[in-house]
Length: 431
Length: 108
Image 1 (cartoon, each protein chain N blue to C red):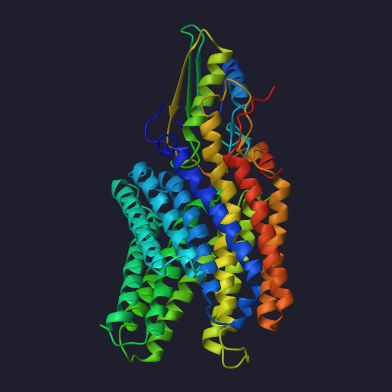
Image 2: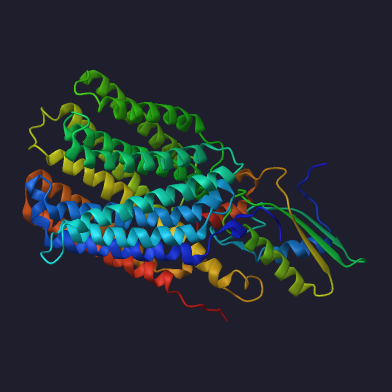
């Protein structure tokens, strides 16, 4: 057997699969809660229920799956084993405990002390720091020099920065060390979290995976190189500005434009990959991914309208914020996971069951571990859920928001069918 | 001399046909038509088979499974032969190495 191959670097299935299992559960619970509390989304302000659902989506679903997927993708992108599998198990345990406590705490059940939020938050913060240590230590072992690795390292650093920043914001509410409005600090928190952590990570992973899956060489990497500088200047610029009680708004706008330009370059990179792909026919995992990129484009348009032209479109306060956030967090982040699950999870499960049997017995392909019809169903329910939910918010129609929420639930159920089908797959040998 | 073999003896051609049963599990196209097999050397007197193969990317998640598949299938077909599979990176694989059959199979 040859050295340096990523199958040998691949983590145990027991590291990756539980993340997908608990992530799926988080998505299911969040969508049930969304149906039960759909009316809260039309209030255009943060109710405890909306806060609970948002945290469950971001931490219990998106972060949970991203952690697991990254443990599997680090060997692909960086050509090393992850730093510590034990640490990954501890991190998962902490994240599950933390998210459960935090979300329960937000609902303010009478029998539970409000302290539960503090304890849950501490678990989540520790899990995030441990995950970042694992990622950054793995990167330190890697000799690969690539744009993907640069983005992933920086996203890990932003994740730690954002957790510490979030902690500071909470403490500052009590001690008032820095006399600036909390909403202003929260704006920085959102930019570092959504752009610095989530988007930088997605860009890093996509830069490697999209060309690999669609079979494209001769990439326009200069787009990503330029975007790397624009995004970092934009993120750090905004992060610096929010500490000042007063700052020139034009500076904030410039940093925001740099971020938007960087994201457009990322979109153009992927568009170029898509145009020059050798695999013209998109497979089951790439179709939902393509839809997710459309949602990404829509979220950027919505965000631009909200921030620069909000006064001219006559939207209610908070309306466009919810639409932009929904298109990014649900439309793009959830959409990309709905597709990329089928490009990651079946392989680690397949390797676990069949690696030693290839060439000796007739084994199924990774694509035979899930049901294609269910992917088609959740791709359509996903598209319709976005349409109905966004229309409901923009038209203030509670029936449309309810229909959107039910469609989100259907998406999570059909996705859960396939992810559990893969996770609990039983070995089958073809005759 | 090119490191990618273009002419094959009858015995090498037979090995090449057998290797068409080895798919890249991600795309479900065989490794020969994907252009991943660079060289096949069959020494019938010494009973040795040597295959030079590459991967589409060094981080290929199923890389050594493909190599294991090549070894297993050749050992099963040629039980008396010594089978050696070399993983090579020069020249670097690129999509232009995919055969016409491979291109068709990729989009089925």
